[in-house]
Image (cartoon, rainbow, N blue to C red):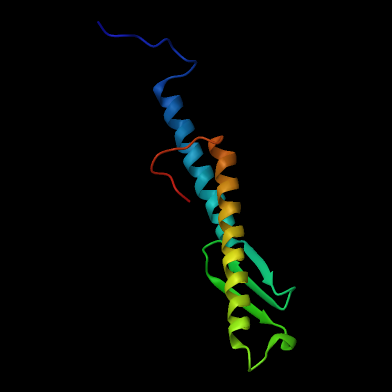
Length: 112
């Protein structure tokens, strides 16, 4: 005996159209986030890093005050910290934008 699911207010074509619209909306949101820039800083603003939503480094700004030939490691640490924070901001924005479209559903195989 087959179980029948009552009509939930739409045909299979309606459901497919909704899925297609969601995919289109997600692609548009992803493209939007990828085109944005995310900035982070370290060392109280001594180092500023900008990345785009594709995680590509766009720029690094270094204050001359932080350039100390005797302490290159500190500058390297500031750059690393700022870069990683900018990437975190880009990832959080992507997750937030996609979450708005999926209603918080965890869809298998869909990662950002």
